[in-house]
Image (cartoon, rainbow, N blue to C red):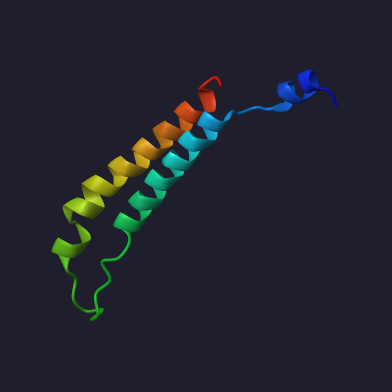
Length: 78
């Protein structure tokens, strides 16, 4: 396979993959921040833990930002 054919098969460049890793990291961090909140006693509901700023606001913002970075990485020309 010559160099011209090989170049036409490369969909993404190095920068695209770096941006994709950044987006995946943001999504993973958002998911980790959203996890937890389990109570040791099933009869007790801790609303402050479940509805905290970290789980309700920060984590979804990071996940949405991660998806936006992923979209940017896919459409960015290399």
